[in-house]
Image 1 (tube, rainbow, N blue to C red):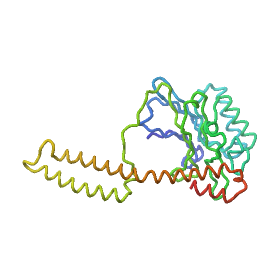
Image 2: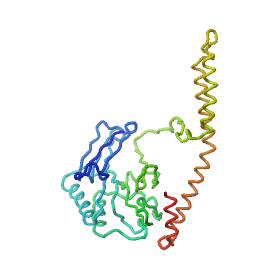
Image 3: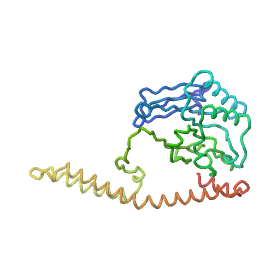
Image 4: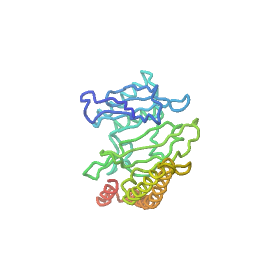
Length: 304
């Protein structure tokens, strides 16, 4: 991993600041270009995507106070208008602002000044709220204000029309990372990229907590060890029976066992997740959600 960041200028060790985390196995980081527009608040990363194409992303962490939030978007607009900055293909981050009443519970629009300033910037850059376009009537939120039932979709991803047409799997999900925000994600495809298959199968780490799997591997490992030691004795080794072939067979047996257990466990887990997601979607589309504290608490419990 490589982390590119801009810390809070007044307290570099605080939780505030913005950062890109790049996976070296997936991203070409050799010629990436990072520029700071507003220290600790806005950074723009341009990197190679595929062949000769580049992608530019603006990462933002907008101020919470209304007047500072408005000034932040105005500052960014001025930079893109006057300083000839490369226009980003993507804007993402914590906007500390909702554009529409549907993005907040209880429903309420954000303050007019910051909203207009943000929209002016987005209009100038020709970017669109991809999740809302994909889910025009869905109510989902990225920032549950615990312990209250108030919540809002203040974390968003904006794309240009061309990228928007090649985007899929828009999602807002809870993660295992201890944070007060939920994760917004999307997959983007490059029109010039070649077809890439599913790749090779890998054993899920969660299966290591399954006692049946662990016991099975221990038993097979003991048998394989004895067989390997026996095949290494003088005169016992052959092309088909030797420690290397025993190890290969052991690996295949472990893979078979892992897949067998995975096939039994995953459908049950997926069914439970799907059921909870269906319950949450039904509640969030219920017209009585704003007035029902019980329904709001149910949504909170499912997301937790």
